[in-house]
Each structure stands twice: as structure tokens, then as C-alpha cells.
Length: 327
Length: 130
Image 1 (cartoon, each protein chain N blue to C red):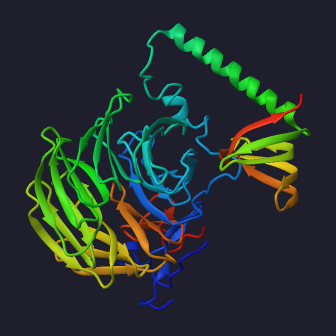
Image 2 (cartoon, rainbow over the protein chains, first blue to last red):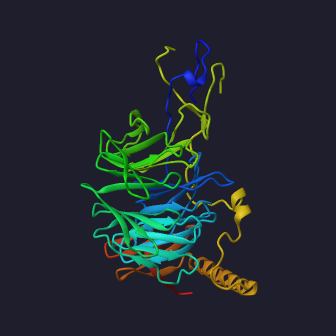
Image 3 (spheres, helix red, strand yellow):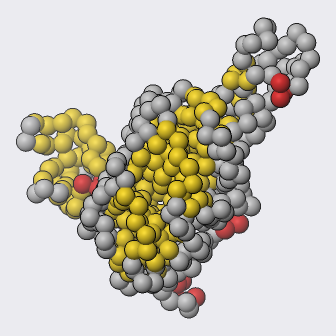
């Protein structure tokens, strides 16, 4: 355990501290997606999707493993939790999406698809599940009537990478390999707006509070108004970016990609504030925790890492050691 | 220590990793106890006695399955697997989640494998003489 000892008294805020990422091991293949739950009476939780087919649930603030969802027969490409962390959903290469009880780890529902499923997303009230994948069709399942046929929305001309509910679950945002992001009306099933890009969209994050959409493509991290799909601002990173996340208070955002590093930017000024090395492979996904105190990254190296937003603060497993204290 | 040097942030311990022989979801955790037994409402029958009956039948089937595994121990078993694979081996044990089956003297087209693990998800059926 490291102890900081100073010859003269200094407050923690003025001590320059080096970020100590917490590594969560357990997966044996690349981690391709991760999601946090909301804040529950038991803290918040984190689910990770992995090519080893075994998505894992972890305690969000410590990274402690809680359980592994066993059942998929192929790589898991997408994973999500509902707000209360009572349900989980996963999307896999075995052509199924599964719904799980996130307390017991039991498989609750298997939803057969016609191709690899890439993305799953619950509505706010957890009654419906949105799926999207390589068959290019968005599907909405009523979890109260799992036997019923899902509502289908077609239009994308290539595999869907990510599908998210937005605007009070009345609309759907989808990103596909056809280099478009589309905004759909759930009821009319029509595309309300389409954004076209020169490159494949690598990730998408929807921030309901403030209606912001974070999109990454090439080396760019772009922020859009989620209602109008108007561009707010865009930033170019030093390397190809696979995922980015905006802090709940919208003062920072973090991004990671091909060069194995995590970048932290000031959202207002677009200035790069810090970059962190640590992963041994490209970063596939990064997300802020619901309280904004940490962010988690998933990598090709098979690990998840937790990073502090305020380096040196006492939180979770990180401990601020004041001058004179010995552990 | 010079004023320009950065000290790494201390950590209390590392995050706990997965347990090797369990899928987790500790039933003694406060969250499990508070939110179970039924976290999700069942979409089928609402009558309590129908649930109890189903529970009883499930428990019976589970017990039969476990007793079959016990009976199979040490016996020569025929495993019918995917891709029209059929092999014989002496059954040893299964792991707690019945993900893997430990066998000895597995007869394969490439010869006899003294010790082997069969993936349960690859096995369609197994048969043996009682």
C-alpha cells in the first residue's frame, strides 16, 4: 500500500496526485460494452459485455464482482441494466437477446432474433426492451407479454450498432454501419431525422438530463441536441476514438480508443485536460458512473478499469491519505 | 519529496474478482434478501397454489436429475453430442452449474483420452446401463 509523506503540511487539493486506476479482472476476452444502473438503495451497479459470452455484474463504486450471467452461447456484444438494477439485458452473437434477474442472476427471457444482436436498452419503467443488430431491424418487446411479436422498425441499410430510447421513451435513436444515426418516432415507426457521417459511428450515449447525444466517429467526439439532432460542438482527439461519455454535470467528458489511452476533456472549453495510460489494448467502451465520481473503461485487453474523476478524493476503494497519516 | 513529483493515490484493496466455482449472486447479501424471492413478477398464473405445484414439480425433476448424475458416476456412458458426435467414456462428475462433465477413458476417433472435460452445452443426451 502506498503512503504519501510530505516534509511540509499541504492540503490534499494542492498535492499533485497520480491517478490509480482500479483493474477489474475476470473476463477472458475483450470487453466490448458496459453500462451503469441508476443509484439504488444498495449503491449503483455496472454490467460488462464480453466476447467470452459471460457478462458480469459488479458493484459500481468498488468494481467488486457480484455475479456472472451464464447462458449465452456466443460473444456478448451489448449489455444494460435497468435503473433499479433489478433487471439486466444482454445482446449476443448467438442470435438472442436475454433478460435476466439482476439480483439472482437467473435468466428470465430469451428473445430469438434472426442474426447477431448488438444492442439492448430498457425503457425508464423497464416494461419494454429495445433491440438492434445485424439484421438491420429495431425491435421493441413488451416484457409483460413476452410471447407477443415485437414491434419492428426497419430502415437502416446496414447492421445496427446501438439503439437507445430517448425523449421520455417516445423516440428511438439508432446508429448503424450505414454511417447514419436516425431518430425514430416509436408510434409512427418513421424516421423523424437522419444524420449522415463520413465514417462509421463507433459509439453513442444519450444524456436525458439536458437532452444531449454523444456520438463518436473517426477521431471525433461530437455532441448533439437529442431532439433536433443539431450539432452543439465537436472535438478531435489524437487517435481514433471508440467511445466517449459526458459527465452528469456536463463539465468534463472522457474518451478512449485505438491508442489504449483515456482522454479527459473540459466540455466547456474543449481543452484536453489529462490523458491516462493503463490499458494494454484499444478501449472499446467508457462510461461515467451515475454520480459522476468515477468512470469505467472496457478494453480489448479483457479488463475493466475504474478511474477517479477527482484524483485523490476518498471514494470507493480510493483513499486520500493526508500528511502525517500512516496506513 | 520534491514539489513537482506526483504521488499515486492510495487504495484500500483491489476490486474482488469472480469466484472460480460459483456464478455469484450471493443469496446472503442484503440486496438479495431484501428483493427476493420474486424480483420479477411472473407473467403466467397469479394463483399461489399453481405456483406451488409448479415449484414442487420442478423440485422433483431437479432431484431426479441430480440422482441420475449420482447413479452415472463411475459408469460407462454414451454421450450424444452436436454434429452427430457419439462418444463413450467413464463418467466422473459434473461441476456445480453443470457446465462441464469430467470423464475418464474418453473414446475418440483419435484414440482414448485418459482424462477429459466435456462441455455440457455440447451434449444432447447421455445414456448408460443402470
